[in-house]
Length: 499
Image (cartoon, rainbow, N blue to C red; front, side):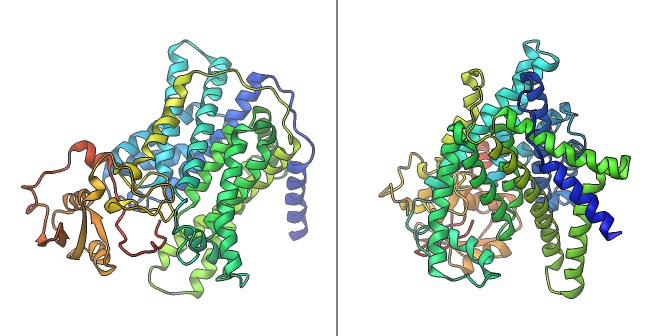
């Protein structure tokens, strides 16, 4: 039985990796197959994102969010196993946009980039339908326009992934977020804590993200940036430092839109071979065999750990571990297949796509402007400043290009010191002797009216203040409540890595 299984899956892998795929497909076929290659990967990215919202999935944040979330899960899973149902892509995009609106304010950078892409998917489809496009022409136009937005969103992400990190504390190995991600990965090899490894981790972050940014628009050598990006984003979720699977799977899906048409078509053909070979071996149920194998491996590994280890919070750790394993298998296979295809087209000598409407760039432009918000005195969350060590609060910054942040708004000037609280979350802030932006504290008290907090603001101590006791002060407007979200303020220098 073992020999037959090895033969079957060895055959599947060999057939998947062998031979150069057809590159001479007509444009409309390439658009269809490119879209089919993208839809299951977008479904997977949405699934990783939704899986991180455990409270919503468990009906702890209201029936409406629960229903929308599970509807999105169903749509995403359907797209994974039925990628030709491309109309369902627009349904999934709509569900995710509505869900994001209900969740505002949202701190997640992944969800922020996702809502821009989902909005673009909807607008591109609606605009094409409005102008009377149907069938293959509809798919071709929407696909090309989605590709423009996806590439530009990746460019904005990589730009700020570099720009926000140009600060004294990211460059400091004692506190750098690059080191915080490096050490867990290097620990298994006994290389954690190594000063040379720390420096490599810091500077390789800049190098890799610069290469991936340049290669997005230097199409002849797109494969170089793609391969560097795939390796980088494959590794960081395995560090288990945070729930990074959603971010890496999002980037992987956006890459599927950013690469040349014929490359995504070739990738689709190779993946299709895996499922065709599986179906030939196992019959109709063969479509689900690859998913069953991945699930079984994850269940066995995590189940074994669960039997041997008992500790507080183990259920949460097991949940994360399952999804990390799913990512390791899914991301690893996708990286290998996509790398193999990309190398076939290095250097790329294909034809460039027709010029697209300028209004498409409104999506990445708005994202670009919103990510400047930490320097403008606006929000510090959801600005692609994750794991950058950046601080801009209190009229100070560690960014090397600014002596002081060029505030246009005063929200970040008004920082309060948390002294104590009935809320465990705020008490933890107080224990660290950290602070909060005043608007952020107001938002927290408004959302938790039963809690009290003692804080010091502008030299005045407020004891056991609650939402009711500060009601006479100016209250945040609807726009402020929905779109301005702030990290807690670390007063220590150098600034340690948080998120």
